[in-house]
Length: 438
Image (cartoon, rainbow, N blue to C red):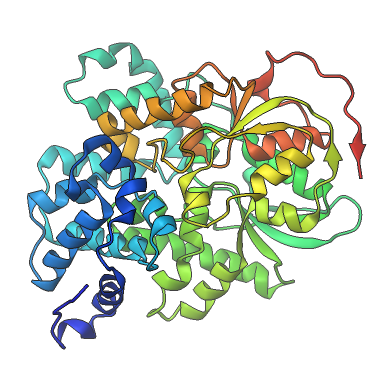
């Protein structure tokens, strides 16, 4: 794609990067075949190619965002399926992130939308505040049908029926490995996940220790910054990221780290991009080190070596977009589940998003709802006993529309190696003693 940025514009590192990305696009349109919003809406401007044209015109002319551009960029899930499909290697993620930051700086949204986005940014990344909000949503759910805006109704409907108690395992501490230590890792405990489902981190700690990892919960760690980053709120997202970088680097310098383990794939995609986010910052070296250390939990489990077991349950594996497209991790979770003895099945169109996408299901509930219904239909068609996923957002989204129990992949692997049966599976038949084969 030909671009016409001026020499003055190209002095801006963000424009430089976007120019590189735009020039790599050859207009082929392969991305439209795997774009969920294009599949649902059928509008070229709701495809990656269409959005690229809008972003190019906005940035090249150095103008404030207009309502038309904002509408179509806001409808993007950032599922990154287009990056998996693109034969030219167009790094759409960095381009759309730049566009969102530009929109946030130059476009004045309607007052209700501004308040809503501000509220989400001030609540979701903070587990304590989020717990209070979930309690309020639980109380307000019966009145949801009276809400005038579908986004408010979506927020009430997405709140879980049960709010788990705080897990003290998320407090700063060090868990020693069981037996010989093979790795020393820092576990990212996350933000929303700590309010929505504490079993995931608990299972992760048990499993990693059992397989020979010393697990560090770093003091000062918080939200990865993804939620605000995808809203274009660069100042807030970079502040959150910088806090994490400082927390992890203290441990890396004091005893060393073999990995930073992340069990929420949406966070993992962002943490692995810290090096890019801080490339022109004094924190550049530390940020690059953190990105190099960052690993999805499935990557670490492959390194540690998962013992064989014979579980036998039929599991439909849902591939989170942030894992399969954002991090290009496609087989590890399935390989681990099969090694544990589960029968693993995959739904049709597994590359398509479930519609969760961070705050997307709250900000774009109608499109998100259509994608959720499609995803659940394909999962249930496999007649699974269990649905497994590696991202809390996907679990909440899919779980709100199906009676099939949904659990994190790591909960099943913990169970298969001697951990407790996941709470979501209490209705499954009692399994016989399961031999673990080293």
